[in-house]
Amino acid sequence: MSKLKPNRVQFLEYKPAEVDYAAAKFVVLPVPYEATTTYGKGTKNGPAAILSASQYVENFDEELWHEPCEEAGIFTGRPVSVGELSGKRVAGVLADNKVPVILGGEHSITPLVVRACAEKYKDLSVLQFDAHADLRDTYHGAKDSHACVMRRVLEICPAVQVGIRSISEEGYEFAKKTGQLSKIHWAEHLEIADKITTQLSNNVYITFDVDAFDPAIMPSTGTPEPGGLLWYEALDILKAVCRQKNVVGFDVTEFSPQKGNRAPDFMIARLIYKIMGFIGAKNQ
Ligand SMILES: [Mn+2]
Image (tube, rainbow, N blue to C red; front, side):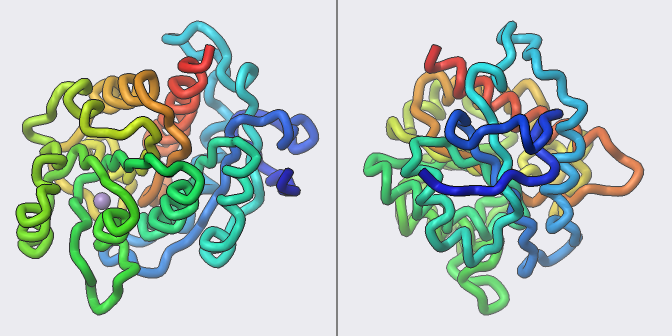
């Protein structure tokens, strides 16, 4: 069993002394990493803002009619560096049969987590929520840029992309050539959740770039795009996937909190707890 120290601020209103790694199903790892963001900055402040907002999230889920945190257990570890993330940290959590929940930080951390998940779960696919296809091979000379995330992921396992409304010519040509185009669900013509689910394998990792949401409800992100998902649209897809598939881990990235606007912080805290509830509900 991994020996992780609890973070001072836990997800939801728990004190560090009240959480138990051994009994937890979900292990939250804050990764306040920011190196390649290109437009708005501040995603390194994302994890702390999410944890802070989560203190005010109601434990009881109004839709599931129970307290997911009481049934599954949530442990929040201390902030993790990218070096630790690419090392054994996620692998250790997976080896303990827990679901890693990664709080970004910029999106470029995702391939590191996907690689660890793919080593444990052979039949893995990735479900990406994002405004951007992120299919460039390099961006500003870097292969590990946040604009190349899904290109790196596709080197590891298949992926389905949802909410997309921005793609480079290079990314489009790549998607056309490789057949990935059929797995891109454009924001303007969002498929029903079941269509998306049929393209996924049984073991699924979810990467949720918060700019998938309409910037009207999610302005707190570095590269906002007009259009995009609303709250219930996102939940419908997540619910279907979590109920029909084995979701082995997930991340939420590119969240850059803005001073004076707390609604997006709270929405992301609730999004994370919703996903936990949907995953937990499946095993009842
Ligand atoms: Mn994006």
